[in-house]
Amino acid sequence: MSNTPTQGPPRNTSGWGIVIVLGVIVCAALFAWHRFAGDDDQVGGRGAGPASGDAAAEAFADELAVIQNTVAEALEKDEPDLIHDKARRFVDRFPKKPAARNVFAQVLLAEQQFERAYEQLKVSLELDPRQPNVHLLAGTIAYQCEDLDQAERHYKDATSLDRRNVDNHLHLAKLYMKQGKMDRARITLVAALNVDSSSHEAHAMLADLYARQNKLTLAITQISKAIEMTPTDERPRMIVYVRTLSKMLRRDNQFDQALQVLDGIEGDYRHDPGVVEGIAVCYMMLSRPADAVGAYEEAVAANPVGWELVAGAARWQHKTGNAARARHHLATLKRLKPDAGAISELESALAGGD
Image (tube, rainbow, N blue to C red; front, side, top):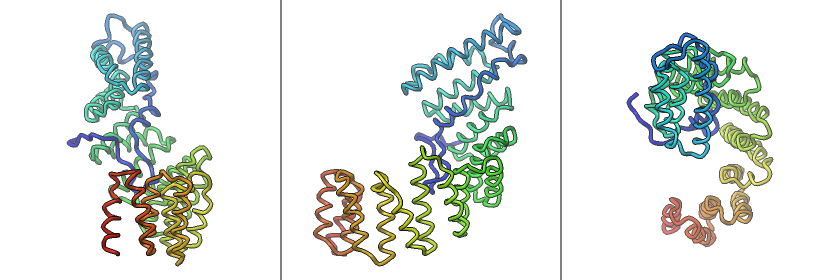
């Protein structure tokens, strides 16, 4: 891999598909470390010390448990540097243990040293290729580094080793979509739904796929299923799906339905900038500009320090011909967010009178 990222992993550009976050995957796939602790074929490996057989396995398991806890505490405090040297020495003592490599990889990931973490995972997989979670994580790092061929190999291995894990199918499908292999992506997502028909992520990704192919009826059906399947405690994700459904309905010229979907959002989420913008667009498409502006004014009244809402209100007031009100909001925006990019755009628009 040639590219070393300096920031976190990329998010799905659709805004609501699978979000690949390395830290989350690390926590979700703590590599089933206890399985490695009892691998008899590695107990006497180089660096294992004088112990042998069951005694060596037990000694390694004890040390592994200790360093796992230490790593967990350090990462919880967001201080991976405090455990880096200890994890590296652990690998030096147990170089033939996949679990040791995985521990160090976790620390390197927390430090955003993606290339080095990937190298540790590669060695771990050479020592024991039967680690679906590690393949999944290695594939995710390769994906982040734009090494899509390597990512595909890892994701395929993870899927073949653990076909009942929906995440394996979802990551592979996301990769296929990035590569433009839509037929393979669709087949993979169908396989994911065969494993778990209630996977809202799979339904959402399938909706994205159909939308890209301009199959809006199918896309609307799938995103509606995603909304239906999303647990109530994942409301932020559900709101994103609802916004996506509204956008798809607008693309299908169903403007009343698109507005109705957003009107059903209650509480603080109703004044989310993305939701308010969607409502305003629906009103404009229904030739109701006053209501479009009203949606923003209502949101600003509810959250007067929300600079994105203030910027939107200024933009829509200008768009509907109320320059004085637009300038009022612009002045507020300058106080709330002096470095907002919208300021220069609004100033230029208002100065030009367009």
